Length: 385
Image 1 (spheres, one colour):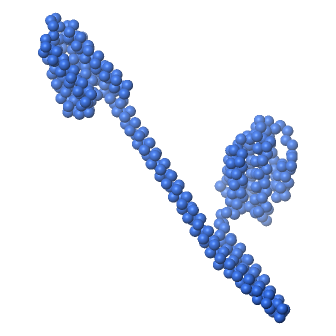
Image 2 (cartoon, one colour; image 1 turned 180 degrees about the horizontal axis):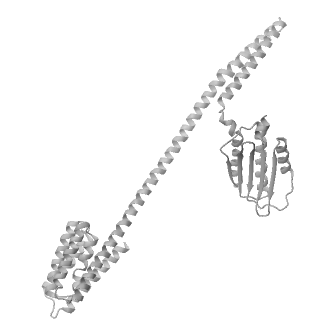
Image 3 (cartoon, helix red, strand yellow; image 1 turned 90 degrees about the horizontal axis):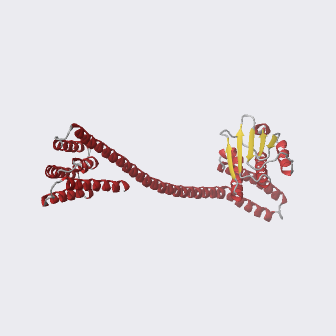
């Protein structure tokens, strides 16, 4: 918009200088024909610039008409030659494209040279150079404006694409949530059938057997003892079936992640309650931990989080669980206020005792203003032997 305003100002200044040059250089008063000529020149110029600037054919015809009016005007009323053709050169660069633009400029330049043939060589060169520079400058402005428009168009398309992508992402999330819910319902339905078929059948049989035992216990104690013995075996077999069903429902991969999932759930809840940022990472290789090892790991992390909040006033805690070939290294680091003198309280002693019971080691380090670092090493595979 600012560029268009500047172009309008430049155009009207050129026309104004042209009119003043005609009036000042004309020895006698300008005739009515001269006034009509100037008015036609101005009207044609404005129509071309404000209305039909995107119609290449009209722009070319308008420039030809204006060059004709300029030729007649300069021959009859003199004036400054440069301002007669200033807007023609400008519009040939701004509103015409390709070969047509260069052809129109060459045509204008030919007319200018023919009209200024009587000028001295210096004036001719100055006039031609001025028009060439004007044409180059106008062409550069047009290309820069086109590049800006293309960039704006691309930006608008990107914004539209971003909006569509966000909508598609929301739809996908909704679809994924629906699928997850449906899958969960199907899994719950399958588990209910498994429980009904195995546990339900076993319990029904036990109830029938217990009722029979109750009725015949008064008459035949020997038979009652035999039935109770058979019921005990049946109960053991049923319990084993239930355990097999539970093991079948439980994914094998869960054993490796059981300790990590417990710690992850702990850190998420702690982060929600306290606002402390917690980052939990672990190595690609993982071992399965037994219940005792998972419990100790859980308590270590729980105690460290509590101490970081109460004593360290931390705002961030980093936890890394690295599974090596021989050991599991748990590194816990906070950005709390730290201390130069560490006193082993109930919490640290509890960690130390639990780790020692599993044959592991624990070490800690802290400095004033540098937070607290706790490093625990466990040997899960040695404990499994």
